[in-house]
Length: 320
Image (cartoon, rainbow, N blue to C red):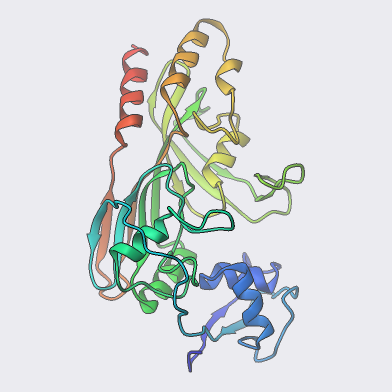
């Protein structure tokens, strides 16, 4: 266990959430690991031990003693990675669609973590034995840019920057139908769906989620849009676009069969476009942050992968 704790003061936005959830999300550890830290007395609130179900209020000071990194139990695998930048503290990679970020029960191999352990010798251990180095994640079928920490100091500082909303994450998405304005903001809370526990939804009393959307191109029955995350909730962009009636093209969870609901002369175009998009049309195209050691402003861009670029080209040409 580290000799000095990391101390965070609870903000008004963070207040009311369970202590184990607060620790997991605020300190970059898994939920089960957060629970264990609390049980072991390695989490104090205002200098006292609390239970995992207790809920801090604004101004409470949460101190966490993070244990030393555990040896990884995940096997390295020689899976190709598109690393666009790397130094002694971090690396930035362009994740392909179809690659799961970290192992989970029933899925212990073939993940980004397996690939990282083969490609990089020094990875931060804060994320735990199954998620070394992982600062943030992308869904399996979302492609694009991710930053990975190579030591614990970088991991802590990048996680803190994410929490303070100092990391810019920009996405490109194709969404069915047309936005009501060229620029709009969706501020709607997200939580686990009350009807399907495998899905997320806009739920009253959920965690605040804010996404800024901007029109990039208007096609016959869909829009190409940019999305900027102000918060980082699970499936946030996909859930927010479904919430406003414009699900992501190719999203089997939140927009399956949406093209069939497009009527009139645009219907054949929508059906043909859907056939050309074989996975959800969502790509993490921009990533910007300050370097955790030097403070240097860093910005990276990743163009649409070939399969999405070809689909976009078809949509553009057939919309003229």
